[in-house]
Length: 303
Image 1: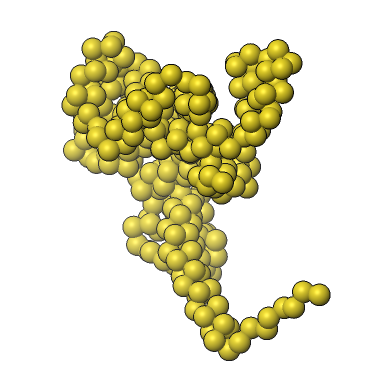
Image 2: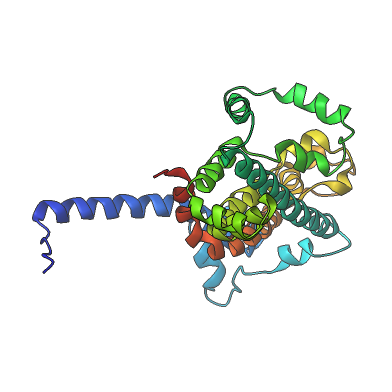
């Protein structure tokens, strides 16, 4: 019979402190995001004159005055005659770069990890040492830029995907997972006439789906949030991903505009663009979150 230890007063006090601290930290993280969402539906005059009570002034009308709720910012974002065409085009670019970039990352990481997990690979120790060397030392921004340009990838989407095709840290974790697979599975498949590629495709990959979902999410979030690579390697503004367009919109002021008759984006419009850039990745994360912790721990712990 399982005995359940009753909580002492000391346990209750510490649990209460932990819950209070976690609640405060959660509010610190969530409140700014809620403010951005609320501000994206507010009238520009309310953002300029109010702060934390913005929510109530938007959704709670006072007297006979209308509330401050408006969809004008989102209408402007999706207006094809204004900033909307650039936002929508950049969203399409970000989706394509994220999808294809994540597929390239997973393909390169899993194939290299599986090869390095095989004891029969000649020169495995040397290759592993080279991988570990890249985790400590990097070429730097300017040498990397020169390499990208010399390979003809400048001002192309390949510059956003290929230079970071493999994360050494993620690859090593995937390798540890492949090393933990039972040797009997590989031996049985070999007896049945299965090749190394067949074992990788039909056995190793299906067993590693939770881990692939985890690292796919990590790679995908990295591609979606990346703007610095596009800032360095892209010259044509029509190829800009969404995050670079978002950066330009948020940082834009009257001095940045060539046409003096054109007004800089309002704060409401900036908030709406931020929300649009955040929602897609938030919609993907809940479907993969349950695999996140399990996938990382599976490859990180060798036993």
